[in-house]
Length: 246
Image (cartoon, rainbow, N blue to C red; front, side, top):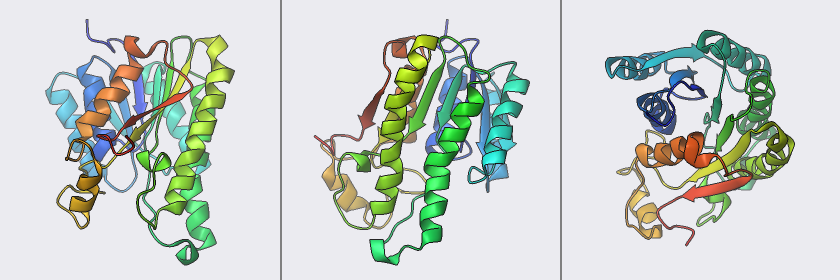
């Protein structure tokens, strides 16, 4: 039997990149998958079609993760259509880049709304549906562990908050049999950070393996945590960065 057979999974930001890879990998392991999108409805439909053509079950829902009401609503919608919820993957994100004195308060508010408030709201909503054996997995960043160049202070701060929140969740939810973890990707070949983009050679040189991750490299760790192998892993972050933080 596949590792996620019979499980219901919600992946936020599942239309592209790491989120799409997680959705497809979870479906391949037997899960029914709901994924959210914001600006890429056609990309979301492509992910759903890919899953369905492979024999899996999936659907896409619009969500504005900067809007708390939208986040709460989409979790309830997903659970209703899935017949419950077992695994929440908080993946939706942005990459604010710039020197600290270049950012506006609006930049700060938007980044924190997407990377921290949306996770807080999604978790609270998901707990209306997730029971014993459930998983809450948030996508952080290896830039929480090591910041090798300037311009990412705001991004790193917002992703760092996930670690403290997840440790607290592990204590709050452990008695209910629900685990909480963070996965910190390193440089990953996606539309947001292509392996042939500007600065890619410099990022590649920081790794021990000499290459970018694929989105599937990250998805493999997420699905492991979501499955039986993750049953005793909680309150921690796992860094998947090819050795950048070694």
